[in-house]
Amino acid sequence: MPEEERTMLFDAAGLPRKTREIHNHHMDSTIWNDFGFRDDDIIIATYAKSGTTWTQQIVAQLVFGGGETPAVAEISPWLDLRVPPKEVKLPMVEAQTHRRFLKTHLPVDALVFSPRARYLYIGRDGRDVVWSLHNHHARANALWYQLLNDTPGRVGPPIEPPTADTRQYFLDWLERDGHPFWPFWENVRSWWAVRHLPNVLMLHYAELKADLPGQMRRIADFLDIKIDAARFPTMLERCSFDWMKENATASVPLGGAPWEGGAKTFVHRGTNGRWRDALTAEDCARYEAKALAELGEDCAHWLATGEMPVTRQAARAA
View 1: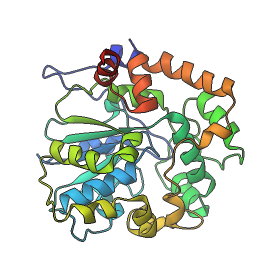
View 2 (view 1 turned 90 degrees about the horizontal axis):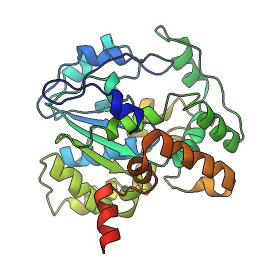
View 3 (view 1 turned 60 degrees about the vertical axis):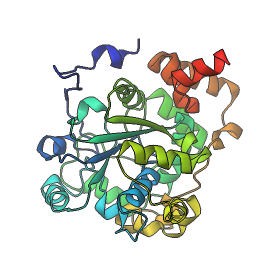
View 4 (view 1 turned 45 degrees about the horizontal axis):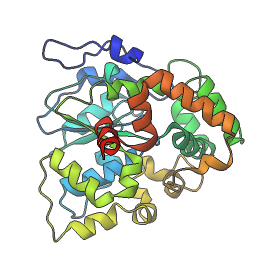
């Protein structure tokens, strides 16, 4: 059994308990200690570069019924991002009157888990994560570094510009578990450990790519949202990669100002498998062995493919 499933602490009601705080150049997890939950809150959780913005767009279309929505980046903030500080962010979120949907990049045991909220967790193969992460990091401009490194509240070392060699960036990330961002494996396995809870839905980037209409209906069912069939084609169009890239300014933090090329840099390609031509067979074997050791067989297989254990068992029986 992976370490996170052995060490995750649950309360008497079977819900995960917060046991630590995480602070770095990006995060301040203490904001969750002061956040007031509502009964219909939606929390979108990922490691990063795993389909977070895409899922926020999907949820926005569901919440607003396919109509015109405010800028998703403004109404669905990354709550544990330390800029702006919680003294600014929390009143803004509290003032919202629509059904709230917020994002987090924390592992379960570093946030406050509420039975009042619904949680969507999106997984993605770590190799695809890193290829997207490298683009995100390599295109960051001076404003990005200023916000993360020079504003008050940073804990630990600053984040530095990346190497131009994506393979080396991947190997550093793998060797140092998420460097220069934050640990990867604990994030995935912490959410895997709570997949059985009724207010948690596990999603996967590959499944969103393969069947967006089906996955949107699945999310809507989980959130108790009835889809207007007449509006559904418009909702699908607005959740397509092409539409999101064309309208990226409304989806990306600060309208994309912290990246060279603006918001369309943030919404980059949306494709998987770009690592296949860069990583050696030995690199992949090393990654896969690490995934198995850190996550266990079922979770490692899900992270690579999107297939849950019950799906695999049914396929073997067929």
